[in-house]
Length: 447
Image (tube, rainbow, N blue to C red; front, side, top):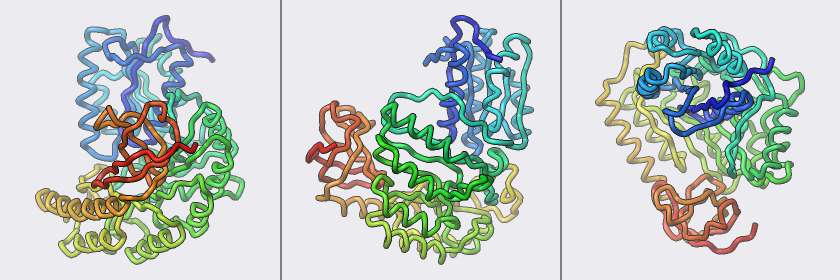
């Protein structure tokens, strides 16, 4: 049944979290625009406000509740406004009880985004709270409409969920078990994006390199990369996130042998101590990771390896932390996202009694960043004088008078140039390397 919005209805989506959530918000926007809603930037003008939330860390949840209070104040002046609450937080039972008290109209989960139009219609016409949360993911509903913003780069899901159950992570409980999209549906979406003018895609999954589980046909993530590289119009193909235990020789060789596949692999180490890796339930050792990193560097010339790192995990001793620093020095990550461990209710690690004091965690994070930032600066300075291919993305966020682009290894480069370069693949000579970015001069515009 077609569900329609009231005449003149406006919507606004507030997105928190990872690339998966950004992609989910595009689907939500596509669904409500198909109902007749129109997007507005100003919350005061919205008849429907959708929260798409993240539950990876408590700090993210606190931001959501703060914004929800702000929107609720607007709703008191505009009683017909509907507030819909979805995403990972909605999957948590303790959150649902709190939402009832706040006055949210619609609560939906990560597995049933496709039901959002019917729930909006039910809440609007029935004037009552509507809740529909699937505890089990079920089959992938594919395809769904999506509102794609004009641009050069797009996110494309290849799979959903996670089977790993790392002891610190809530994702398997909020996103469900792994389900892979069919190759045909992925290919169709990629071809449509190429026709719309997108030149770069990032293939998404909680663990992309375990793609293929649950499908009738024998296909893996390397096969998807080969398929994507054959699509005319797409110039660059990226992916995230990879798990060290599932990074196969076939996948590494595929990246090395296809020009459109960017030489950047985000493969989170998380910790450098075997004891801590075991407590985290990561499924590999530091020795395995070192062997993997060496293999990637040998087979993929110029590859950038980036990581996630957690300090202060329960039971982490000074020696364990030194093992993490040792791994950072040996692998020499091009960049890393570093985090203090924080207790996540509902995970196994939350029950561990040997929690590390906050001050110790802060001290270790400062030292980790000092070491990692030093390595990143050293690696970036080595690029001075080299010529790098960039995709020009637009004005620099730090200096709007200059342009910025991204190298194949996912480094930001800031340079002087005309706006007609936006969207182009150009060559830039690197003149200066800093910790988080590069600076350069345009050499030529070949593509």
